[in-house]
Image (cartoon, rainbow, N blue to C red):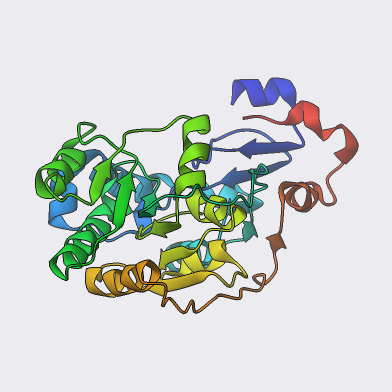
Length: 299
């Protein structure tokens, strides 16, 4: 409160979920943690207790002072619907992220195996086990000539260690560890397809990166994924927890019989900002001294 009284800002924009108690002409908060809107299971809670804490705590923290805001900012329409379902008809703006350009599209490196890659940290909602189970199913069917690359080494946390114990002997599953930006660029060049079975995301950057590289996508059939994929022909969706359905799609790719379903997505209803510049216009609309507002920005 003290620093806000000194600055006397026209706009106080909080970029990390929580609404502070400050003095400002207008407040807004950017909420990008979707964990309160996820129904966590017992196994997931045991494997990642910190996520259970966020799941419970953020449901309360989001509510604190939330009605002080001129608007709440989220990345997708499903999050807006969840906020309104939990907290009533509060003003929520959907703002798509302004993503840095990625290199692409590029031709994949020629290889003898079909490479599926899933770039993800070992978080329980990333649903990595569904992809690993799909690899085991393909192996049981006698399907060969493919590998699945995971960007973890199996030592990071309880969940990672469980994955390593359960799937470490599956020949087609490779634990390649966390990648640098340059290493990840190489992984995309070597990949034949991106698989993204995550059950919870505010966006899902690997989907956007895979699309930018022109790679085929196999993506969980969930609202966030439909938005992030956008309009794209080279994509198929599968039920998030169906290893069999995912295995069928993977097999069709390996055997070159894949028939993608494609996806088309239109913009959500207003209030909506397709990029950060548009969002800034919404936040500063009708504010006094809007051209000088940058001196009052608080992060």
